[in-house]
Image (tube, one colour):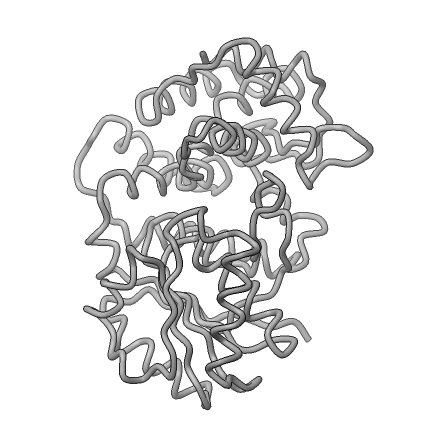
Length: 346
């Protein structure tokens, strides 16, 4: 039987976490956070409930073999059992790393993801995908294993700097192209125009509900779950190129910059309407800025896309759109069209 995840959107993370731990009858609780989120954990949680605490570097820097090895050593030294729980307190990188470590330790200990960023709340903490980066490739080593609980901390979200909100917007924009009903489309238009205050709890719930429904249908990511990769094939290549250049491009911003590229390719391959392509280019440019690459960098982006783990037989496979909320999975896309689409956005 597949593991299921209980998801809680909470304005009192301390109480929600204590209730989850009580329900799980944990015999040991290990706290993982990064250097940015550990102070927030100290402020919002009762640290005395943890048998051990471990801090890792912030962001993608924690998703390495060396950091994973150090985390596993700390978990072993904490004398955890298969009835113990790791609490991954932070953004997507923390839940990616901690989820993989939990799957490896004693062939699987229990997991609670506490999402403290918008990106983690709407995407990374939910769905069980875990992983670290390897040989320059994003999430190249990992497993799919569902967390037992996901607690989305509205308290922690209120502490986010503007850049972290922007990082989460990219995934919200992605869901706006997938979720029927129009609420998220209205929200992204307000975001692009710096409009009125948004109901973030409602936006998060819409995104999480959609992702949870898709994951329940395809927990092992073998079919319909591929729709959630909308924009990611391009985005991961942009992130990897930035890393090669000694820069950092946050994942959600990379997704946001990728969506107009996907829209253009969707227009050519799947008949996506011109008005939708133009609309998406405008809102993404207004929010995330134009791409700015020279010809050699565009060629490198195409090379990196070819190494994406979602490809097959050397072909770039992408999720495209035949219309709003009508994704088409695993469509092969040629190099020339990818270059043409990136040039469209530049």
